[in-house]
Image 1 (tube, rainbow, N blue to C red):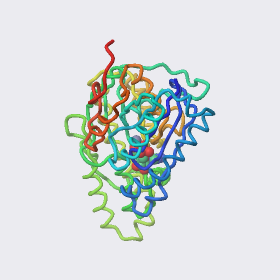
Image 2 (cartoon, rainbow, N blue to C red):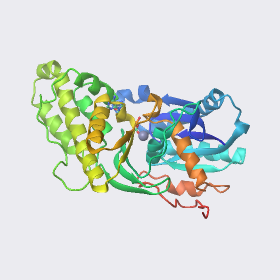
Image 3 (cartoon, helix red, strand yellow):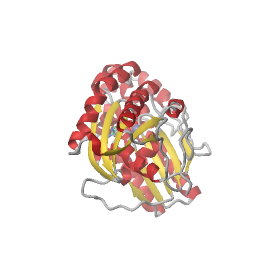
Image 4 (cartoon, rainbow, N blue to C red):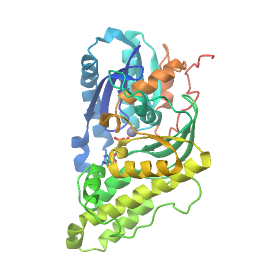
Length: 357
Ligand code: KG4
Ligand code: ZN
């Protein structure tokens, strides 16, 4: 069955066609140029850009897959968490398509979609990775920094998450403090390669705090204060060292909690997704930790699956469909679950009938 999937939870307008785990097309329109001058996502502009681009992106996804709309067997859509005004654009379009095509609608949680990006395959069914349950899922992105224990396709348990800013958001804000561009994550990575991570001695957030939650707002403030005490000339001359110091501590915070989560749960599989995983240093640190603990680690197999995309939504949707989690005719219950404070949707989202197994 071919699934047409839609993702509009933040600043990427995305649509894809998938068949099982195979990605037949994956179209992403990034709104970075629109939000750049604000140094972050501007909700009203995101909504407008999604409305403008989504119809085009959907058409392109169908065309690139080499099929016509009539061959689509189901629609999958991200219903949260994310920016409500942005999510609503995707939900509206998905409902419309499902009604017109008389096909089921599969609601997919954005965080679980990031995990399924690790199981996506190309057109030829590569790579041949097997699912590895149970796994510890780590999402590190502009909106989330979460540790989730995943026992099977339906059973999720949030172990810890950031209490304020996400890691990517913190990198973006630190870059702004340094007068760099947006998004800051890739710029910070590039600068860090040439900088001394011990240039500034910054506190690792929540290091001695028990539990698995994280926090970045204190680190952001102490970085801002430390930079404000330096002359502009010193800042300009030491951008690599400043970036490297911030990045090191931001990643160390994740590594501390990740190690704790792996040790306390005894999980032997780690699945990591989200935009910040594009960072080679972070991947290396995670791989080194996994090796030390004898844990198998999975990252998205292709660069286009790392940040927000719809292919991951289609792959996740396929497994939800297999489990009988989809809406058939009445799509209204979806309106009630598209909320920003949405915790990870697990077994029974409202209105979704679960097939007796
Ligand atoms: O997953 P994503 O595309 O969107 C969200 O769901 O938020 O992640 C975007 C985030 C941004 O904060 C961006 O700065 C960060 O990922 N990012 C990076 C890198 N590439 C993107 N952070 C560090 N290093 C990178 N190479
Ligand atoms: Zn994301």
